[in-house]
Amino acid sequence: MATASEFAWSKDFTIGLIGMGDMGRMYARRLANAGWRVMACDREEKFEELAKEFADNTNIQILRNGHLVSRASNYIIYSVEAAAIGRVVEQFGPSTRLGAIVGGQTSCKDPEIKAFESYLPSDVDIVSCHSLHGPNVDPRGQPLVLIKHRASDESFQKVESVLSCLNSTHVYLTAKEHDRITADTQAVTHAAFLSMGKAWHANRQFPWEEGSRYIGGIENVKINLMLRIYAQKWHVYAGLAILNPEAHKQIGQFARSSTELFYLMLEGRSDELRERVYKAKEKVFGAEGSPKWAERPLLKEELLDRFSLNKPSGEKGGGRGLPNNHLSLLAMVDCWSALGIVPYDHMICSTPLFRLWLGVAEHLFRTPGLLDECLRVGIEDKSFRRDDLQFAIAAAGWAECVSLRQFDTWRERFAVTQKFFEPRFKGAVEVGQAMIKAVLESEKE
Image (cartoon, rainbow, N blue to C red):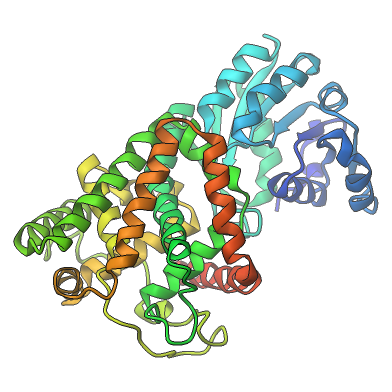
């Protein structure tokens, strides 16, 4: 781990953090532990609480507001909601120290860069970043996007040096490239899990309960990651979907794919369903027997059975539920196919959640006989019709929120389902963390 003492210019170099949510706190602790002087703030009403929380860390000083942080810091990171970045930068940007470096940690760079260009002094360099993982994931080896938007080589090198203490893998992109890739890798993934949660909520169903149809393998990933998303803050997903112009078409297409595939199943049009799904399979995963097809799969099959809320974490087995048509996975691959997205092209910028979900899709589409059984169930078996109906409705609802840029509606839709599943968040987050850790470890083998 690179520490502040390794750099000659670090003696009087101060890092400012405006916004001390989960990611802001993680950055503050990691930077301080590496020896950097950190000035941080959140809303003024949180000053006493934060000052008490970080009282024992001599490298972190909590200030009352962003004006004080901006005046005192050589490198300032805005770690706030994407929806609020314009308002916050407008408020504190004019106080930025002469010749400072400023960046943001939002998941959507379009509004962030516009805010910096509008409200920062012209003598300020702009170098943004984005850690492509959650605050509870070990950043070592995870992608860290660095965006040299308006900066000297010296300023950019300083940012790289500071953030090297995270031990992440640096990825160099423009703001537009970042938004396109995060839309390709995250928008559909999030939409799938958000829609699953709404569907199970609509049917008043806890899919992990005893006697459930959702048991084992792929179902474990669905349930754990759905709960993991609903255990987070609503704005994390709303900002990426609504404010990222590149995400709109992905989420809209995902809703269309979900509805159209469901109609084919409902109407018994098996030939059309098979032709469409197999066409998507070849476009996304390559033809069987091709060099691409021979590559090592992302997930080992035994990994899927290891983590379940139907049994103690880590216990193998756990039984099997009913055969499922896996509409969510079919729709995701169909969406990628329709938009010409090859998810493997963006693995360098992928999140652990995306790699898990892509690995599950790969498992379904590449395991001999599994996809055919999935299509047969979709046509012949009515066991999941109610859930599929609600899933298609939910996907369309999220897409409408995005197209109309309705933050309030998104928050309300999210909050009511979050409350429904809240009793099981603690166990789900623990199992989800263990699942992601196991996936990351398997990738190193």
